[in-house]
Amino acid sequence: MTAGKRFDDALEELLVARNPRGMQSLRAALQPGYYRRASALLADARRLLIGTGFPVAGTFETDGPVGAMALYRALEQRGAQCWIACATPLAAELENAFRVLPLQATDRDAAREEATLRLAQVTPDAIISIERPGLAADGRYYNMRGEDISADCGIFDCYLELAECPTIAIGDGGNEIGMGKIAEAVAKLAITPAATSCDELLVADVSNWGAYGLLAYFDLLEATDHLGALRPRELLAFLSSRGSVDGVTRENTLTEDGMDPSAGETIISELRALAAAALREASA
Image (cartoon, rainbow, N blue to C red; front, side, top):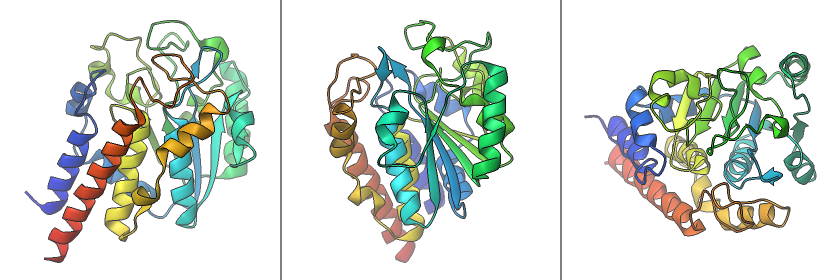
């Protein structure tokens, strides 16, 4: 087994090790090396569109925006120009600190028109969806409880469907954009699955952690330390002060999917250790 393959396997295993929502079964349905392939798609990208924001209890959840903000900052440090696409109320809370494209359309026809216009304006080299609700086969959106949340969702699916660039999606439950890529495996989960697909699907126990997996590849391949500079508690506090809730508990806490922020910090530490070990092995 090559060093690169060992790193790929270790990273992919780490990110689904807790398995609260069955992501180990989805990992098995994906061709190994999906995080490495996704990072390669971003290597030369200079204009990127990052979609995020999952509606919960009249506001937005912490999982997704933390990873989106982390990716935005890391990609801009690498010289890229980024936009975060999200719906209200998240869009209004981020627009003073990030470039934001508000997702305003609530029906498919209007969404296709909006996506066509915005894609022509931004001309992205890649599109990333992180914890965005994905349309089910019946054209509706559903949360982890099976509740229809279509009225609260701006539509981002059309951006991936109309894209003329690589598309990457990160999810942790089965109802997010991108899960249509492995529809047969997702159909076995106790959830109403999303049907929208993508070029590269990344799974993790918490979608924010999937963003950290991409940062690990940046650090490995470029000898940088984006993970070391990451402060997830600060990002969680930023969102909490603006009305976020935990997607599982629906409470305004500094948690993600019911997990204490220390869980995410542990993942970051373990990813850094994996990258450091791989760099040592490569230089030996």
